[in-house]
Amino acid sequence: MKKLSQFFSRHKHHLATTAFVVGFLVDIITFRTINLTVSQIILTGYLLIVGGSILVLASPLHVGASKIDKSMRAWLPIIHQYVAGNLLSAFLVLYFSSGSLSQSWPFLIVVALAAFSNETFFIEKYRLPFQTTLFFLNLVLFFALATPIALGSLGLLTFLSSVGVAIAFFILFFLLGRFLAPSAFLHNASRIAGGVLGVVVVVVLLYVTHLIPPIPLSAKSIDAYHSVVKVADTYVATDEVRSWYERFFDIQGVTLHLSPGESAYVFSSIFAPAHFGAGVVHQWELFEPELGTWVIKNRVSFPILGGRPEGYRGYSFMDNPTSGRWRISIKTPDGAVISRMSLIVEQVKTPPVTVEKILE
Image 1 (cartoon, rainbow, N blue to C red):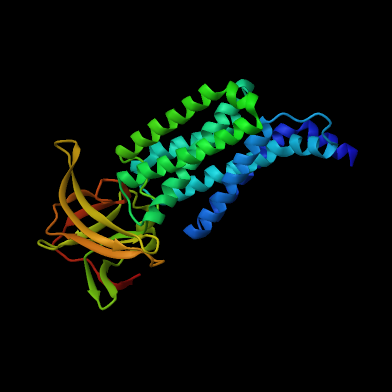
Image 2 (image 1 turned 90 degrees about the horizontal axis):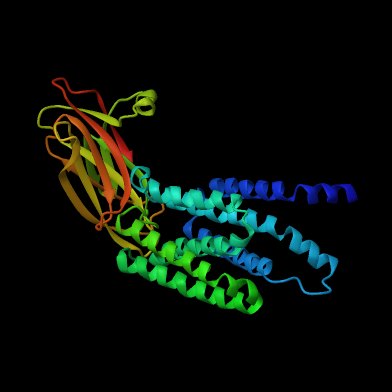
């Protein structure tokens, strides 16, 4: 037993690294399958553990502390690292599922860098400022999810409200830190304030440039068809007969072989929480080789209502689309991209073989 204890003591840092990686991987798997209510409960628990461990590690160990207290203090960084890995990987999964990678990759890289910086940052005098800045980022990410669900809406005011709530909770955290660990928090007050200000500036800039995914909305499905018709409460689509490898290896997107004058349809299913109302836009863009850019050809707006586990269904179409490369973006009214698909349109004289399918 003594040898085992000595082994763990010698390799404590490596165990912290392992704990962080394990926590990261566990949430990448689990947060893909649980609903938003359970996610919020788990995230709240993570935030309490991370915030509490920061306060305990920053406070001085009192004179005459027992061996149990010293042992708990010695191993607390491993618990902190494990839960920190859980927390940031959970946000990475949730935000990744709520936006288009082509649009939101800068934000996702910021979160990923924050996750791995938490493991590699070992300059002691900056440890507390870094941990508190990362904790504030987690608060912003959490309330950017929770506030729209509570208010049942998206938009700039909702997002700024979520940042304001995060700031309020962080102020309470900082005041508690000043009470429990006055020396550490007062000595690092300016660095902590600078970190918080930096996070606020970055996340607001990312939001107004539409780089933050519009969580809690997420695309359950998006695909292109020859036609889509609503029959009672069911959507019936006409699709080309395709082998499985055609879709899997078609890296440029789905190809529709259309007869002259035929329209192209795009069907989407967007998940939103219960009692959540929002608008979405199907934006059709054609790539113009002469201009070297995407040109908007059609925009179709319609409202969605939350509560359906499979997502709120809707479709749009483009009359007699030009042959070429298309992309269809599913957006919020203020421009945040929920999902995006690529489409190749080819005009043909002989219609392809088609089949009808029920869309969920």
